[in-house]
Image 1 (tube, one colour):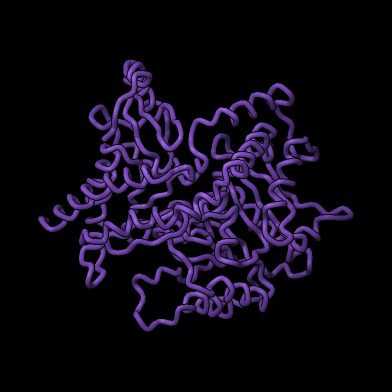
Image 2: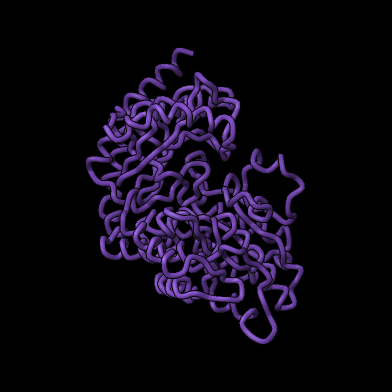
Amino acid sequence: MAVSTPQAIQTVTAGASLQETARKHLWMHFSRMGGYDADHEIPIITRGEGAYVWDEHGNRYLDGLSALFCCNAGHGREAYAEAAAAQIKELDFYTNWSYAHPRAIELAERVAELTPGDLNRVFFTNSGSEAVEAAIKVARNYFRAHGKGQKHKIVAREVAYHGTTMGALAATGLTPLKTQFEPYMPGGIHAPNTNEYHWPADRDPLWAAEELGRLVEFHGPETIAAVILEPLQNAGGCIPPQEGYFQRVREICDEHDILLISDEVICSWGRLGHYFGCQRYGFQPDIITTAKALTGAYIPMGAMIASEEVYEPFSSGTASFAHGSTFGGHPVAAAVGLANLDAFAEEDLCGHVLRKEDEFRRTLEDLRDIPIVGDVRGAGFFHAIELVKDRDTKQGFDSEESEWLLRGFLSGELYRRGLICRADDRGDPVIQLSPPLVCDTEHFEEIGAVLRPVLEEAWDRVRSR
């Protein structure tokens, strides 16, 4: 249950005015603003420490989503604040637009030391969407520089989320996120994802990879610049690849002269037990996109990390990758990023995830006796529970049923009981969990203790409808 702390209780009076002010002025992201009124509060989070956050009323919550898959090292690390303060005193800001500064150089070197293969060229951005945008642009530019300007299309997967900027939106495979903004950048192609829970029992494990190859052939490999895939697909509920999937996709890309982009905005920085998700699944991309936990989410930062081959056309003479932003590689963000990587190394956070992932998984597997639990899937500290109406047939919920189940009950009840996670129906209805990498046995037990009664009540409500 959510509990109160003395420090947070003092904010209740201020919190009342925060609610009113927020409803007047704050336009929140991906939020139904009409759902908030005097009787339906905006959740206002006021502080965090370790795996927990507190709201304006002093209620404590286990942050089972790491804010949004990004506070990997946990909340409240003073060393990060000290790194930011020291950097502001030394150099508050200078742009990476035709200039450099020490922290961006040092962080680029540290990142390059951790990437697989020769992904040595680090192009800093401010967010994951911007990192994907940069990757799409550099892929198109790379082929144009080699006299293959017709190669411009991007292959992604159905239900996959790759960001909200117009180029990233073309790669995103979620129709409801796209239709409001059409027409968007042309050239987005979507192959089946790897969610085998609903596959026929006799389907070839590499079917999704072969379907991707078939679409490449259908649309013309001479027109395709890149394939962009998450190592573990977020939208749709932590969808893992089949064994050999990425190796087959790599073969397809090599055969047709296509760049492979590993979108690791979520899957990097320990989420799957490795610095990069591609290391978990043993494949070598040409480009990695990252963000979120690069700085522990203490300050916004992202990056596109390219191989030497991708970088080469922009490396000499008058050539230039004509893309960038004022704040990409901000010195304060870079300083915090360096502090974050220090914490990862000193505390072996990736190793901790690998040692504890089975225990975390068992916490969720133990819920399979509840009939609404259809599938449990994921890797590392990134898992999902798919919810079903009939476990034998794997029948899911229609859009109206998902609305009352997820938004009408589960989201609010889980939060009320002190657990922040994601009840989502981009694809089939799921509950997603991505707790901070500092979590251990007691946190897993707390997650299970909240999930069990809530899912049991959800099933009772399903049966009674």
